[in-house]
Length: 386
Image (tube, rainbow, N blue to C red; front, side):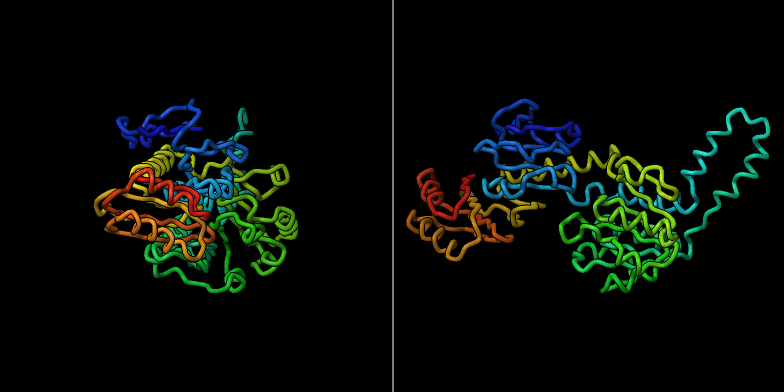
């Protein structure tokens, strides 16, 4: 029986994927084998020695201390793509709403209460909210992952001309992308072409302030920008200056801040992107499945700090070893399995930066004594026998 601690309210649809004969799910437990989390801040959390994995029901993991988890042999999972449809729908909705000044117009209408000449006032006042259609306009998509590719495809269907920039596009994303999306190999070449720009990349030191003074200078006058990825991807000072000069005519974002609230042309929503019941269910289901498969079978899928290793069992017992990515590790591991007289049915080793994972299916004397010898290898962080 594995104990799973939940740090936030996790969708019951996801929790149902954890068999109650194998998993004990609880809010209050001092020594869990796994943790399910959404947005709870874990950066200063002390982890017990038997904690094996943390599954984040969402894509971002900035609330989890990844380096410390790696050092302790704790696998951290996220759920890429599980909330992609929810975010993409909001982006398309705000693309249209921002073009037609819906937010400002709706707020203006609220002030018409009690106006005896409302019909005339509406006809006269609507002129100040005239916007434009998006059909025939050009959209630049920065980042063509699960969300960006959906936005690009939908914009094509709505009659827009779409350019995409992503130097790290995955094979899956490329297969799902419409052939009508024009690929740009250089961001600076794409920006001058676009009436709208939407950004869909993770927040990293290298992506901070992707929209800045220099990139804005390359844009068309009157460009509209959408940011439903992370607030830090757009430099606030540069954006506000560009809006004052007319370089940027509109900014739609899911990340309000004191500096941008109430500014003309800026529409903020309160982090609504993935806030749908469907997205929460999808994220919880994926997180629960990842956690379950790792705890029961040692398989690692969608980890942000460990390599991906996913193999069907080949018989016997499974030996799972998290270790540093150093030369000679395989020979040290196999020397001990040979000494124990094991027959290795299947073996896989993969690395991710400075971390590595070796998984063996073996028959023979796979026991506690072998686990202790493997754990004694200096570069080994954690050994599990399943």
